[in-house]
Length: 412
View 1 (cartoon, rainbow, N blue to C red):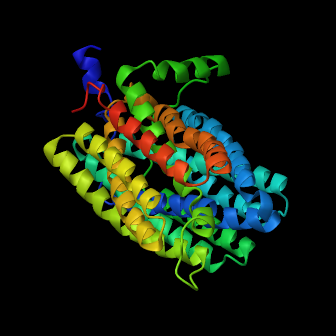
View 2 (view 1 turned 30 degrees about the vertical axis):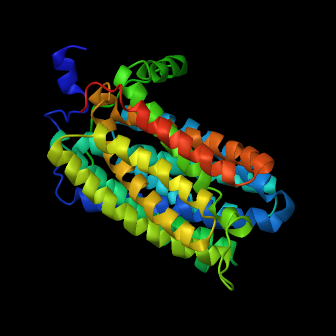
C-alpha cells in the first residue's frame, strides 16, 4: 500500500465539516439504547420466554433461536451499511431502524412457540442491524483520526450503561414479556429520534447502484486487506468467547452456580450486570484515553483479550456466588477496554474512507457471526460436558483473539 493510500485510510475527507461538539453524547445515548435492547432481550427476556415454552429443552432451543437470528444480523448489517453508503445518508437509516424496533419487539412479545420466537427475533435482529450499521459508521465519517479513541470510548460506554439499563428493565418485566419487549423497543426508538434530530447528517455523494454479485465480491475483497483481516479475526474470536459464556449466564446461574438462599437467578443477573457495567465503564474510558495518549492500540487490545481469558477461569475454579461476582468485575474490565480500543483500531485500518459504512458492516460480521456460532457451540459443549468446559472454551478463544492482533502492521 502506497503512503498516500495509508494516509487516507479511515481519514475524514476535508469536505466534511460536521462539527463533533455534542456528537459524542448522542453516540453514547444511541449505542446505550441499542445495547439495552440486545442485552435485555438476549440475556433475560428471551431465555425466560424460551424456558417458559419448553423448560426441558431450553439449552438447545436458546442455541437454535439465538443462532438462527444472528444469521439475519450477519446478513443485514453489511447490506444495510452498503445501502446507507449508496444513499449518502446515515440518519434516515438510524431513525428507520429504531422506529421499526418497536414493531419487532411487539411481535416478539406476543408469540408463544419456539418457531415463532425464532422468526420474530430474526426480524428484530434485522431492523436493529439496519440501525447499528448506520450508527457504527458515524465515527469514521465524522470524527477526526486523533479523536477516535475518545469517540470509541463514548461508543463503548454505551455497552455497560445500556446493558445495565436493559437488564434492569427486562428483570422488572420478567413476568410480563410483552411489556418488557415494548419498553426496550421504545427506548431504541427514542434514542433514534434524538440522534436523527440533534446530529446534523452530512450529505455525502450518493453512489450508483452496484449489482449484487459485485457487492458480494467487494465484501470478500475487503477481507483480503491484511490489517483489516486480522482485526476482523481478533474481534470475532474474542466476541465468540464472550458471548458463548454470557449468553448462557441465566442458565449458568440456575443450574451450575451455588447461589445464596433466596436469591433468584434473574435477580442475580440484575446484580451481576451493574458490577460488570461499572468495571466496563472504567476500563472503556481509561483504555480509550490512554490509547490516544500513548498512541498504542495493539498493546491494549492484546492485554484486555488476555485478561478476558483469565476471567473465564474464575467461575471454572470457583463455581460460587462470590466467584461470579469476581468474574463479572474482571470480565467487565477486559471487555470494556477491548471494545473501546479495538473500535478505534478498526477505524484506522479501514481500506477506504468513502466505504466506511460498508466496511464497518463487514467488520460487524465479527460481532454477529460469533453469535451465530456461539449458541450452537455453547449448547453442544454444555449438553455433552456441562458448564465447566464452556469456560475453558471461552478462555481459549479470548487468548486466540489477543494473538490475532499481533500481525497488524499499520497500527502500533
